Amino acid sequence: MRRLAMTGAAGRVGTLLRPFLRQHVEHLSLIDVHQPADLAENESFVGADLSKLDEATAALAGIKGVVHLAGLASGIDMNAILQANVLGTYNLYEAARINKVARVVYASSNHATGFYPRGQIISPLDPMRPDSPYGLSKCWGELVAGLYYDTSGVRSLSIRIGNAGTYPNSERSIAIWISARDLAQLVRIGLTHPSIAATVVYGVSDTDEKWWENDLAARLGYQPQDRPRDHAHIEDGVEGAVARAFQGGGFCEFNHDGTIRMRDGEGLAKNPEAVS
Image (cartoon, rainbow, N blue to C red; front, side, top):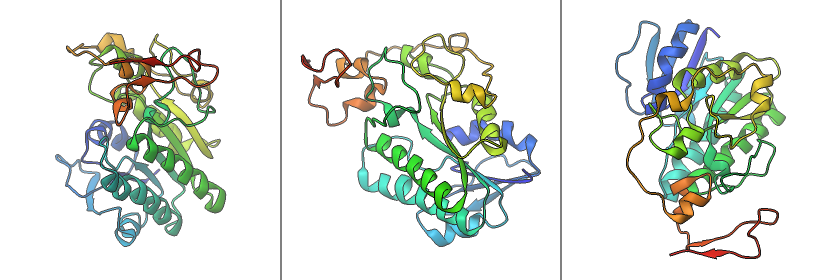
């Protein structure tokens, strides 16, 4: 695509992705409320608050594809999440419809399914199971992507990103980490593959600790190049019992009463374990 936009471009993931994406486009428009550092010759900054539809619409003028990273990356303040993640994502898609943007790559999250137990392999076809207000907002975003494909033909790849840190820093992150270049590969697939409609995949590098069945990503051509254990720098830290039980880790502890509950077919549905 000649003209690509990236929302949330000043954030951590946007900063990691920019060098891998700008080399493939004529121009990369960086949309954020804060100006990113070190703009390249083919990058420009567009200041916009996506919670305001008029600003989102103006920011996407002349754009053919969007990588939507903007929003709160964590947190439990539902009012802030409603503005940034819920309203911001809805406005992004409405602006895409108005501007006839062909493609959106939506940065979803593993926290959309974070309350599945560790050790259970799940796929994008399994029901959503958010672990937090943040995870709930990512479920909303995936549903918005589906709505705008069905009503307006905007094609989206929603990537349920595992851990997109600079390196894996825990055993949990080793199971779910994705390198910047592997994430960039998935983003390029989302922007160009002819079979993308309202498609959901997991964003993870070549890990041996399989939590997610990601065959659809492979069928789309995804071939991860990095192995998490090769890049790991494990930091000290102890997870609580609730965090250890579920794929979402510490996000699952928000408002949790300490009783680990498994659903039907997960082994402990009739015998919940009380933890202190």
